[in-house]
Image 1 (cartoon, one colour):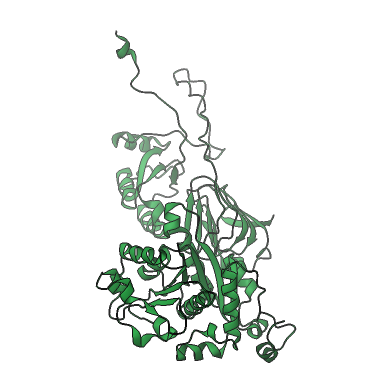
Image 2 (cartoon, rainbow over the protein chains, first blue to last red):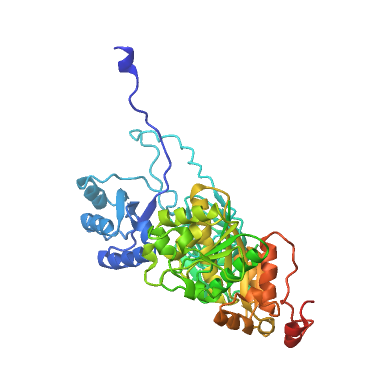
Length: 243
Length: 271
């Protein structure tokens, strides 16, 4: 074997990717169709060829007759590209196998009541060592963000100047505004429910974390209106606390 | 090289053309060779405010399309030696303006003048975009009411992102706020936004506050820029604004309602 033949032509690398997971709660494709359509209408730019993992492990056990092919087609219709499946039901696993759809292991976000896979199985391959998460630096903005401007970042967004009414801040992570926040702030837009919003003066037109939102109409009655505020998601309501 | 200043607002009817005429005249009064360009192609107001409407032969679009030279199209002011106007065309629309054409005209003017004032049309479309695109400084004309403030805010965003300076990554356009049609007594009654409110929302430097005044309408109808009316508070306020534009530190007048009554302020002059 020559030296040239021994040179590797590829490398295998592990990488952590943030990906949207569609957790199906009911086997009702018709309802899913119009509910998805409504979501897409609100944020069309985030539904164009968005990679997606379909999670079927939350479906009630009696919904084994789910039409996986139809579900995939429905997702693609709304601009979502299913990459793989998270499922435990044997019928679902078999359907995925027939469609050549990879099965992904359950996520950390799974409820703790779910039994852990048996670890004493000698045939099971040893799990790969956990990979370092990819570090996404925060985006820092020093200029005022004016009405009509939209800023999106994959990590955290930090703004050190006023955010005007009509401006829109979008982040996969947290949003910090060390000045009056008069526009819209949408944190955790890819579904991160632990994302938070911090602002020095709350005067926002809309606040949203992972799709749960409050508009100015509700916010301005809150005693923290105009104050330094921390906003987090608890259950499916936004919780405001003084900073 | 001339300093290129755009007078802009987003919203219509806030006093852009009145401001362009007065600031341009004020700069010429102080000895600077100044030209004011009307970018409102299709509507044409500046020549009326400047009182030169009967002497328009060639206009901005003629120069852009090379039907006329700049020397033929520039209208010399009757009152001031070093003041010129380039009128807009009334028979065309804003599509007649091209980026290359505007650039050629502005760079030719810039080598012959001290100041080029671009009077922007309302809106954020092509005419307004080209008026601000080559600017070094911007005067954002705003009325003390919410919709005007919102439109000015939008325009400030465009100045910071869609201008030549922004696209080339040069030093950003110097933005200044000119608050017009201000009436302190209505601010006190809570019917109008105060200077501090507007300054806080827009967070840019204040160039001046022009009080609401009958002299502005009168001056427009007569075709005499209001800055030439020494008696009027609006004229004096524009004069102060021109001094500030040139770097002088002048105290703001006509803001106060606490110490003086409305009539006293009009007739009593400064604090």
